[in-house]
Length: 174
Image (tube, rainbow, N blue to C red; front, side, top):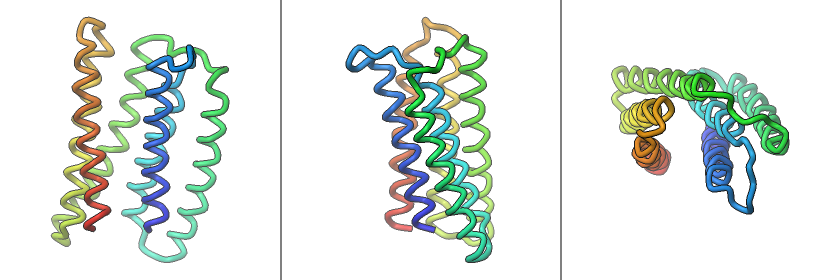
């Protein structure tokens, strides 16, 4: 399980890094990194969620194989970033944001359900981390719809950092 969780967190971290490099225009790049950021964040969150559903060793092995395939596809997506068009408008940005929110909401509900049934510290911290992530992505919405509310994306990023640290704490003490 640690392999899946570690690779999922690596996917999310790499997606965040690629997105930050794209937004900061480091080295004068004008790459459309939103696609890669969304792919990595969705993939990482999805595999954390799926790992909580696994019931057997064979299922975990299958999940690991699929995650390696997803990670290879993610690396291809990153390499092809210079060829992607920029995000055409707020509707697409909202759709990408909604995908992350849906996956993280599913993970929140799953870990909250696990906490109710097993009352483990790990599931409590994980559910709180995913709840804060959903809130962080919800804070993105005003900034996407109104450019005057761009400060909301900074607040959203700060909230998501807290959420990712919370997930890391859950793995550390879990």
